[in-house]
Length: 113
Image 1 (cartoon, rainbow, N blue to C red):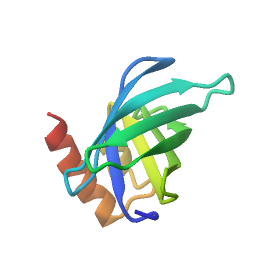
Image 2: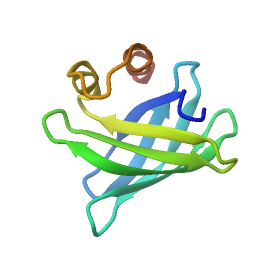
Image 3: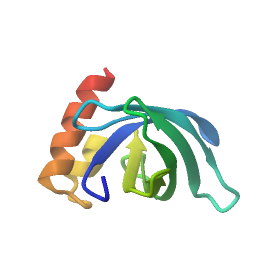
């Protein structure tokens, strides 16, 4: 973790709902999210490897429907979260793109099918 592990997932709903995320190593996370009065999102999650934590979605890319954000696990490790119905389009558009992110998104999308 600490900024090197990517989580890619899905959220459901417009104002609140469940979330699902996965990492390149196959760790699966589940949780809930809600939109705050300021328009940002807050999420809490627990993962299959025992990790749990919180994340804040602070940016929403309208063209791809992708929300991105950062968070921390309960043990203090930093993490980044993003979710959306066309997250692969967002990643390939060049916004924050790197090879690890592209690989993670590809594997995560396959595992979520």
